[in-house]
Image (cartoon, rainbow, N blue to C red; front, side, top):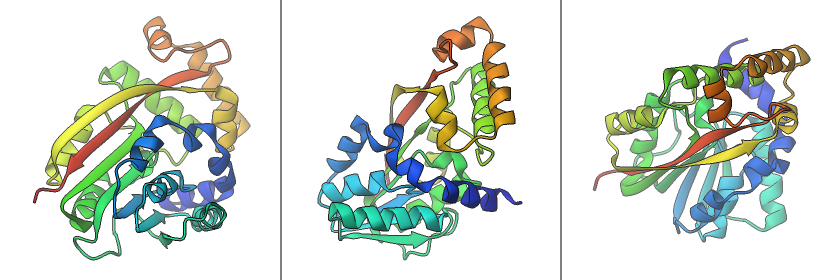
Amino acid sequence: MQQRQLADTQFSASATAYLDSAVHARGPDLERLQALGAAAALDLGCGAGHASFALARGGARRVVAYDLSAAMLDVVTREAGVRGHGGIETCLGSTESLPFAANSFDCVVTRYSAHHWLDVPLALGEATRVLRPGGKMVIIDVVAPEAPLLDTILQTVEFLRDAAHVRNYRDSEWTRMLAAAGQTAITLERWKIALEFGSWVRRIATPAARVDALHAVFAALPAEARDYFEVGADHSFSSDVSWIESAKPN
């Protein structure tokens, strides 16, 4: 199965779990998205729609929830109706080829999705194309530490947990990729999120053999990695998340 098909199949099976996930459904970053006050916004890799709902609460007249998984988009449509967000529309497709005209949106957002994209530079180029001059791009995602050892460990546990994982990028990589896509005024803010091991693997239905492998990896971590990721006795841990904001030049 190709990687894109794998991601579609995997997330289609767990769409409702992402709607109910506390990690995805809560957070001050959602309040911050709401405060952006975008008029027309695109939510790339929308998942269960939490970023889209925040943008709608902020008064956006048009929000497009865009995802590779039809099942995820069904969840967004249903929940948008429940919440009274009539301005949300859904669209199926990959981030590397957006079916929108140039200069269509004043804000492009992606939240906890970009680590699944097969070609981030191409996707960022597309996002820049569909942004209006002066429009804002906001990326919210788990980011890799700059230290190679810690980076390698993060990618290992993420892939064992989720076979559709591609890469959590470093802040320095995001800065370079956004600049190469023509984005300017790049700023980054980082915080940590706590990930409870049991719900982390249940959410994506990680197979038992991979769960066993994860426990083995966490048990064998060197002390500096255990300290950095705040690994607990049950192998719950913390990851870095960044709010990465940039703009399309006028």
